[in-house]
Image (cartoon, rainbow, N blue to C red; front, side, top):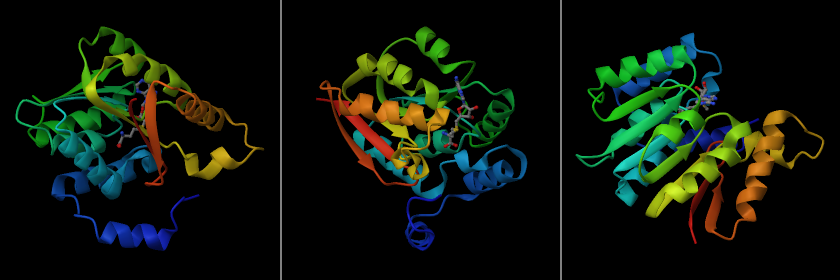
Length: 212
Ligand SMILES: C[S@@+](CC[C@H](N)C(=O)[O-])C[C@H]1O[C@@H](n2cnc3c(N)ncnc32)[C@H](O)[C@@H]1O
């Protein structure tokens, strides 16, 4: 179930700067060859992430959940010259597609794909992050959040994807794993006095979080 009515989403997309040829081709290949192509952020959210990186001036970006690389490539478009993205992916096939397009886009020196469970990668990565995009397995959202919050730079931001979970967070009878995990994450953030957050109805729900 789409949260935003299809016609309105279509209208918003038609009034958003379209992706260039490479991300368009990447999206096509993803739809044709990978499982769960609805996971790809796409035009509106891709541009939104690009805007967040641009507006915050983020230089060090962390992404949890690369998939085929659409969001990483979108964010890279707004990075300053010295900016870098570390992106974490556990699935080899997803990482292979992402890596191919990142290379073709000439971004291999700016985007590093870390193959393996994101929590393990995160424990190995050093330093702080200006912008973190949480978009991997929903069951670990609270763990990701707790791991990255202390590692945000002073004006750092977290964006967590799918926090409206197709509206299923509202359905009290839905106790599937994903729904419970997203609900738990949303309650965790709402009850956390260390942060200020806003839940946006962009695509499948995006929550922005910063330190209070
Ligand atoms: C929603 S998709 C990411 C979409 C991507 N950000 C985009 O916009 O195209 C989630 C990805 O997280 C990966 N994933 C799932 N569990 C993971 C884990 N424990 N560590 C790292 N990646 C994981 C999945 O294989 C999948 O590719």
